Length: 234
Figure 1 (tube, rainbow, N blue to C red):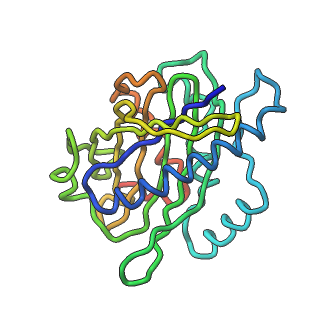
Figure 2 (spheres, rainbow, N blue to C red):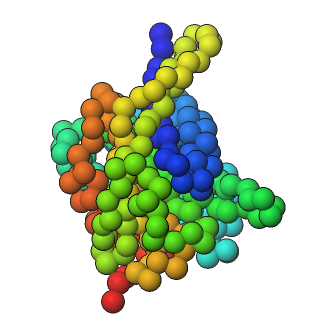
């Protein structure tokens, strides 16, 4: 018996590449944990963002530092109408979890990169936050199929990225990686003045078909303004 999980591989932006490595590892670890945790749940109930002791400690540390936590991102993303927004109203969240990680810089400073993942039968959706000082302006020149967008008055860039398929043997055999399908991602500035940092919303399909941009933009317009700390454009 084998299981396959896909995670997005970022484009040429150096920050995106560094974050991608953590997102892939974090997504796999979280997915394995949630699969086991939700096995005992009733099959007709959608997965919930239920923090454990480590999540609660991370959330407390993030709050003290005036940052958002992975659990908060998960709560914002895992809304009841997410399947409908994706165009699959009869589906439900199979797994939902947040993670709190960071990336190191050459100067020895860690940049927090909390994230959340919600997986349905057809789609997987990720939402992450980066606290770096890189503005959105100029990113369109570095990413594939990039298009400038505006989300709730905030500058944004829509682009494509390749997913990596991870196939692992649940019986204890070796895991394998291979190119997956196309994911569509949206990088959004946390404020209308684009003063650095970003949110990133990424959507990909389990069947490797190209995701619907309309659905991605619709989710961004509704989800991001509900994230704690989101700045409403004047």
